[in-house]
Length: 333
Image (cartoon, rainbow, N blue to C red; front, side, top):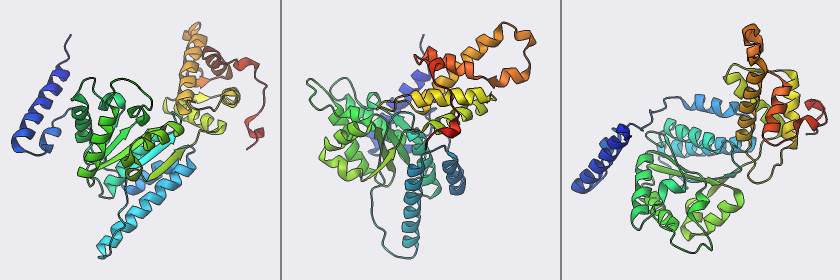
């Protein structure tokens, strides 16, 4: 069955292209009609800094973000006093495993740039290879241009950007065409667009070496380390609190054991893994309470026990019940 919203989006896209070709320029007023357009964030820089500080872990990333924001503020102040600014690229490379907060930091940076007046809207547009690369000749430049236009006056966040470059790949591949289009538009819209590329460390370095123009455009790199066991427990506690659950002491201990045993290799899910464990624990708690649901009180409905998380780990292939029991405060730092 056809989706009326899809028909509307196609119609707007066709109309935008026709008007752009007729007037020979951008048609921002048509972009404002896009129902996918995000509302502007009106928070102050102080509020955004407080949100940054409240995030679990990421201490090195937080420090680099603070330094970047301070640098941009000083350069803006120099301009106000008639002093020249140091022209630097604002495009960034985020490297790290999944679930380490890359998208969260990218969104915060977009809002910070808006609050400082560097970007008019400060929204975030997330894409991956599928959102930029077409299947047929001539389609890639069109798809990449569309993504860039949606991101104008904000940040274009390209996740798994390394997929645009496939060293040794044989056959038709239009990833490099997307890269070339991106590099040109980054120059054309250097005052209206910030691009952040993200992915695994080793693959991102291969990506940056795949085109001579990439290294010069992306001069600043932020490394997102894997979360520690204690940080993953704290993240799980946040998931619980956001949904009005609480973790019993046995649950905290079980989580410590589960996260201690999780291998921190490339591809480890970090906060995504913590969310999966949490959601699986909810399933086990529901099964545990369902048999006598009419007698369950609010306290029991809100409480997650160690057995719930041990069952969650088993469901994901982890032998949680065989772990040696020990308290979190004894874990070596």
